[in-house]
Structures are given as C-alpha cells and as structure tokens.
Length: 329
Image 1 (cartoon, rainbow, N blue to C red):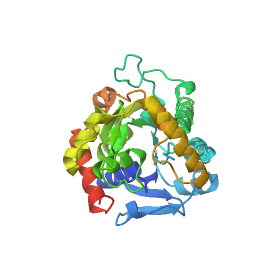
Image 2: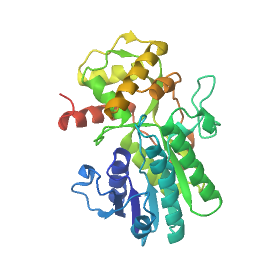
Image 3: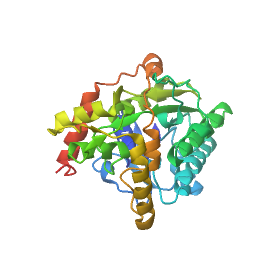
Image 4: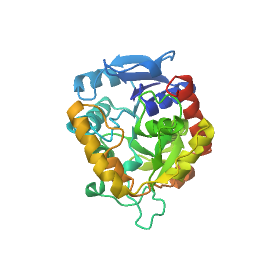
C-alpha cells in the first residue's frame, strides 16, 4: 500500500513521514522543485515533483496511491503578499482533495490547526466543538486555514473525499529546519535573545506525538470529523522558564503590556514591507497574544487512543536538535 504525503520536507510533515515509514507503509512525497530536501535525506521515500497549484502534477502524483496525508501548508504569520497564503492553503488544499477524490483514494488525513477553532470567553481550554466563524480569525494565516478546513469538511460531508481532519496545537521538537514561528521563539529563548514576555499562553505538543496522532486518525478517525492533537497548556512565562532551564539561560523577567507592543509591531512590519524580510514579530502575532490559546485533546485521547508525552521532552528535543545543528550558538 502506498501513501501520498505532502509537506514531507517541513517540520510536521517530516515527522509524519518518519512515523509512516516506521509503521511499514510505502510513502511517496510530493515535493516542489525548489524545496529544501534536508528532512528527506537518508529516508526510503519515493519523491515526486509537483505543486499544489498545478492540478496536472497532483493527478500524476496521487495515481496508484490508496491514501493521502495532506500536511503541507504555508505557515507564516506575515507575508509581503498575503495572496500566497490563500493560494497554498485554500486553493492548493482544494486541488489535492479533488485529485484524491477523482483517483478514488480510500482515506485522507488533512492537517488543519487549532488556529481554526474558537476560544472560550472564560479562558477555559477549548475543544473541537468550541464554535468559531471566519470573522474570529486574526490574520491571513488563520483565515486561510479556516477556509481550507471548511472546504475539506464540505467535501467530506458531500462524500467527494473520505477525509479525517486533525488540528495540531503548537508543535515543538527536532527537525524544525526553517524554523516555524513557534520554533523561532524556542530558539530565541534558548539563545538568550528574548529579554521580555507577554501574558499569553500556548498548548505545546511534541512534534512526534502530532505525527503519531496523524497515524491514529488514519486508522481510527471518523470521516468528516476533527481531532485536536495537543499536549500541555502553558503560559508564555512557563514556556520560557522550562526552555531556559534546559539551555542554561536566565528566563526573562520583564512582562510587557500588549498595548506597548502594537506600535513596535507596526514599525517592524513596515520595515518588512520595505525590505522584503519577514519580521521577528508581527501585528497579528501581538493580537493573537491577547488570548491564551489553550485546548484539550480529550476527544483524540478517548477515540484515537492518542497519548502525548510530557511537554518537557518536546523542549529538550528541540533545544538539543537546534544545538546539534548549529542553530544555537
């Protein structure tokens, strides 16, 4: 049996790839011509060149496969051209879902995000049933993922494609080559380049647990349903403290008010538009930080037998990988 995987060169996708290979599946990885293939080195994987916006390449790539894991996404909280996010995350997702439907694949696992979910007004952790609408989505990344997930759910309910949806929280761990926004934060803290923090929080999960959750969703998930793949809810101060204990740095003690950061964010983004360089923090990121992104993975634990490991292991593996690969000086 052969599985087509998108996003295998990326952070989450490379973890999913390794888990599928470990389980004995044959994997075909859809890779763009320009992609950095570092995360594929040494792996027994069939590489095919294609693009989510090129329907002909998708039809060729998925032919002969019995399943699809669509992990690829443009994960940026800022882009000089926001249309790129919608092309990759919405149009690209629609294209590959329709290709999977036409080829008659038996099962699809689509990687969404907790970014598409609602948050409880009382601050309690949200779950898959916490309501959200498009207007709740802050920034183009969240909006694009919300629209993409809505499209996948529609196609699943209309029986166009047999898709199960997974919603990872904030993955942390090895092989964060780019790194992702969350990985960049961990790297900055571990390097001693984070002098202050804001009052917010995230649900942190080991990237390899996210990969395990993908396989479990493939094996046991209900078509058209979604499952949070999360770990531990931590405030930003708690995250920084744990990372600093591992890296040997002193954690930041200055707490900055959100209102102070917004003017800085506007200035940094303006510079980014002038230079084309991605800002280290963004207006959308500052707005998102006003609320704690806390979630529970009870449904995945109950229905998929998902079992996330202690969050300290995620931080340890991330810092060790950054250090061993010369990101951490």
